[in-house]
Length: 417
Image (cartoon, rainbow, N blue to C red; front, side, top):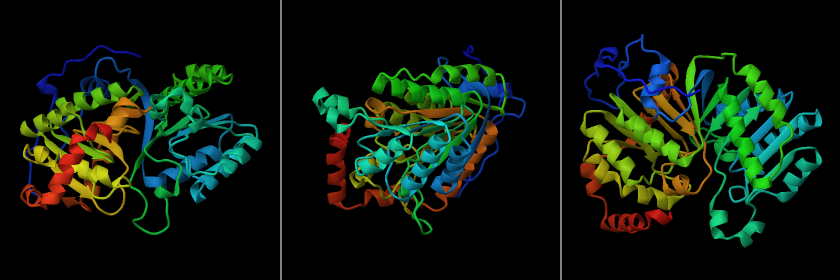
């Protein structure tokens, strides 16, 4: 469903509250209660984005919440399971998911799994072969055997994380199938977010999976005709009140960020696992802060790619001098790719704010306009910031000379990172 752009008058807006002292204080909503969610979606999303009404969404934090919900959906599957992931690691979590998928296939469920060959290069081939023997159609995306097609072919990786079950429930976010997200011991699990979705958007997520599968394997995907028929029936059923768009074009996700930040009236809160922004995003964040919007970034203090932390810090001074607040997550690895604007617009998915996601990877994000879900995501962000170190501009300027030089070198090669 495509809708015309809606112009929003100032009478429909509440006054933006003044900033107060302290660590990311909560704010009253910018929008007055009578403003419709359809209008909110049109205000924060570019005109070309198709917005789906009637979805029910649940925010899940980390693998601790996401994995049980995903496994429950797999174990309750009756018709089909479509899983697309960058990492399918053959550790304890991978074996747990593998067993659940195999059991589903053995009871007659159509199970298709697409994992990225590069992201899962440490996994045992024998594990995947055993799943195939038990009826799971599991395949690698662009295996290393396709090197003869050129390096650029191999650079385009499948970075998506989608699980769709029976065309009724889907999961999207940054969580892969790996013990990184659910290790034993408090504080060890990687920090991440997943959105559980029911409603018309499930079909759109499933359609992205099918498109990638067909592109990779030229497979006719015979079960998809039945899925489309069920979608036409379920599309008329409202499961909730969330307005949601599914974006799989890298450029469209990037434009959605810029569009929402440009229209922000109160706050822009961004959690980014890997943050090497382009000039347009830096300018948008600086402009928002300079016009009085609260702009806060939650970034890694330590990462699974340590050099990226130093490359990211090359942007700090330019952002801090404009009034952007930066919080560094120190407890473990931050892997979330989420944002929330004005407590209304939000996005959760696989897209990182860096060059590889923008130019090469296959990505997918859910973008929503909903005050209730937006408030939950904002509360989660603000709670995380309470456990962070806030970067102070004066202190940051006094960092060692070697660190400044290292950051400058990495900044010069940022397009290669």
